[in-house]
Length: 358
Image 1 (cartoon, one colour):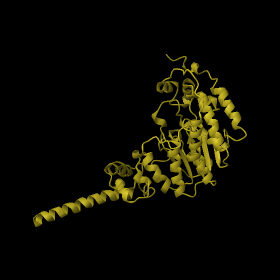
Image 2 (cartoon, rainbow, N blue to C red; image 1 turned 120 degrees about the vertical axis):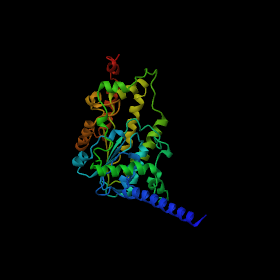
Image 3 (cartoon, rainbow, N blue to C red; image 1 turned 180 degrees about the vertical axis):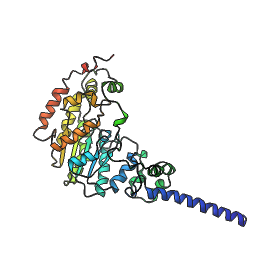
């Protein structure tokens, strides 16, 4: 190789490495997923990628309260929660997440913030029967390089072309256009994207044929509930008596109850709920709520976009009920609550919901 060729090759690699390091530095400094620090002043950050951003949010943001859960918690407004409970909160939803996924991320939050006072968490009503280690996504779905403390695999973050020309570029573009950062009120809020009411719910629901028999709750079900609730709910509360846990069963619509009734699993679900309640009640710092006895709300399909997802007006009502202590389950009232649930949902005339359907 001639001297000129060597000079050109060395120059090329210098330019290439300079560009590569510059690109990596841009992502590391701007840090769109908050892996290294909280948002920089003067930059506008979009919140739009839960499983990439939530880990950094809990590690680096300033807060003393958390809102978390599945899509059933995405319409909560953090400012409303802050005003009612006098806190400074973050909202970290995990759409479709399991009890384990929620608990794992709360453990990370508590390891990085010893000033947390309140955790508001939705317990999806259709999930307490799941095995304790259930996860919605396969392990290789997760960007584990953002979750661990290994600096060497951060190359997957800082030298990631998709992140550079996606998330990092979005921060720059948003800042240049004068748009503000996404607020926790707006983060993952899907209200504007859907219509609500009976027609919308009917359009998402296919009613199954009525099952021939009734599925009883099994010993395996009880085992799953015990392990799931213990591992993913009560152990954390027991380890942190200084934190108040406001937990609620997500209030699905009357169509959800029809689906259980048609499948013959309604009695099993109610028995499982009672057992789950009994596992959580002994903890003084757990405040457990259920709103299924608000029959007018559950049966009013104007509150729902499908059989489960309710609008933000219900999220607001949940906050007010919780603050007032309404619908809280206690050792004194939970058995009466369970009896009311059985009386209403096992005797409801579900067929009349569909009488006007073609």
